[in-house]
Amino acid sequence: MTLYDFCVLLSDSNFGTSLRESQLMFPVIEGIHVLGLAASVGAIVLLDLRLTGLGIRSATPGQIMRQLKPWYLTGFAIMFITGILLFWVEAEKCRSEEHTSELQSHLNLVCRLLLEK
Image (cartoon, rainbow, N blue to C red; front, side, top):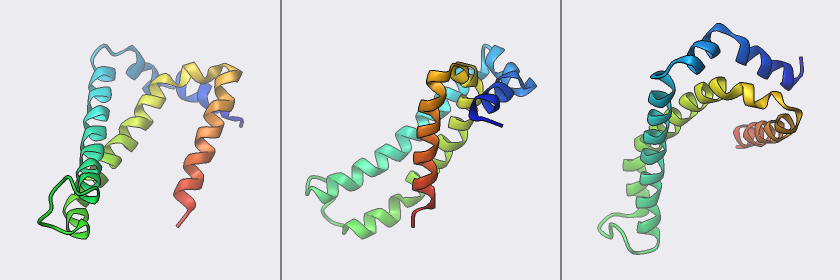
């Protein structure tokens, strides 16, 4: 099964069709995705501000990192789960061969990042 066939399978599934045709579910999923992004990026920005000397100076970067870890990991998990659902809804756009090669390169990058230690 090629990636193109996989996109067709997702797009034509009952779940993909119902998500795509729902007027409420897509905006809700996309909103939750953006909230996950805000939580993750917001936590990382606070740490970056501390590293540049502009943020919380009363704590070490390690202490800040430990306190923010649940926030950025939860945000990443939310983005990952809702990202899969958003892809499932938009899989029909990957049916063209030009998008399939781009999607393949994105999947290869994600796999390499997940497999690295």
